[in-house]
Image 1 (cartoon, rainbow, N blue to C red):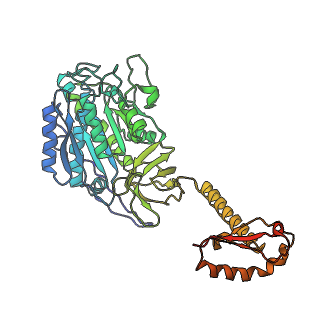
Image 2: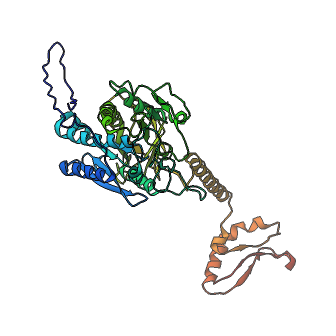
Image 3: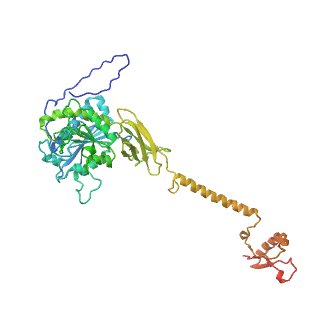
Length: 489
């Protein structure tokens, strides 16, 4: 039967009648068969045709042999008023891990039916964007054959393990970036999914990197029902057996260029590696049972991954959205950049986190946020204060510089006032040049200055340069002294 999930309101001291009707799955008793790369394309096309309102198929790029790498997007169209939580599932990166491909194809069909038949799941999918890439290595998938161990088609057509090709740069002495790698990176960028789920085969453990990622891993494990086989660990190629179903990636299979490391350490998004079982490519008659075991875990993971926060970064004074603001969340280690409308979304489990937000021309903001236990994402608005730096200086330095400038101005004005009060006249402004006066009787002529000024101004109108002498003294020529010299223009 198709599972049904719905909320029920129970009133205190009042019984509630509920009738739950289950629909039989038409293909439940039928053996699931494997899909070739061409059949994968057809299966996704059929879903987009049957459910055009919320299922859209697209090619994210080409493989090394020019095969399309297909992705199915589930959910409503992009809403410019907000960013919905996004979850990206990537499977069959190793071509011989065929179970991961079939599980994601079944998940896509299951979600489409749930959207149509179940009100609660319709609401969940209306509030979430889900992206599925069932076969990231179609060339390898074509070469693979049934085999529980690593076999043909594990690498791509160029002989490169794609799970080791996600490097931050590509030195000349190492493998170049593969076509499949470019396509997946493109999908990561275009979808902006906050949570990435790498679905593999060949083990039962679930692996994570960051502390918040561990919550995703727990959600997947908690969804397992009635599968004693999946509760046992598989021996790896070194004969190591893990005692726990949840293992840190550094202890499990951390390596250079790993896809999970790239998502977490380079993109700073939620990421988790889930495995469908010890056998990479079992016989087709086992697929139905493996899907039964895996489906509850995948649904539990979806319910967890859609939690967190979404919102907008804006100017505190004008409420103008700020595009390109960088948001880092600690201790989760996640980062996001607001889009052209100032919008962002980030997955977070319940707990206390610090948001560090930076935007060009604005002060860095540190904001503590409490994420409550919830079944969906909550809204958060981050308001930024404009940066008041003076010529790139910090506020403290700006205050010191301004204080020094004001002090210099005050000293200059004070000095000018003191000089004026001392009795010194601004002769230069009047056009005079004071000459040396050695006469001891200079005090006797001070009273005549005002009359002489009037006389000089009269001469200015009619004469050129003329020298005036003091005639107050009756001594000899040596005692005579000049008072002023005036150049009359």
